[in-house]
Image (tube, rainbow, N blue to C red; front, top):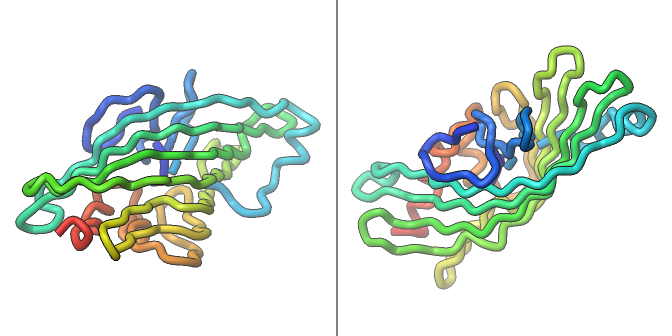
Length: 202
């Protein structure tokens, strides 16, 4: 999903990294906040005249789990993520924008019955905007498919544009179905989203 993200809650191994919010991290320092920046983002023209953008790639494997997510059974979300990261800077060389194309091949599992379902294909673009003066992320904008789980006639999908406050995690705007991301409203703790898989894993 994402919000993509040095260590993520819930454990797991990483082949790259994520920041404390679970967003993909740029190798060599700084977090490349998955999982998102603003539409019509500013800073592009400045970046073109100043420091050129950098391109990196990040691979992350992480497991988020909660044994009590659904009461008498838990949820385990295994995320296998690849992110192509473009970081943009202003004329002073300060980061102003991070654009990530994120693809994931995930699974979700009922911890009691062992029922395991693919969460794939997941494909979205996450753009994070930064205040060049403070270095703080101000907004995250995501567009694409963040969750995609099928079981028979059931289809759990989280898709469409969504704008998030970069500091609080509050949803500022959303269009389309967001049953998983809405559980994260006001938080960057991915484990809060796990109850959203209870019905399809029942």
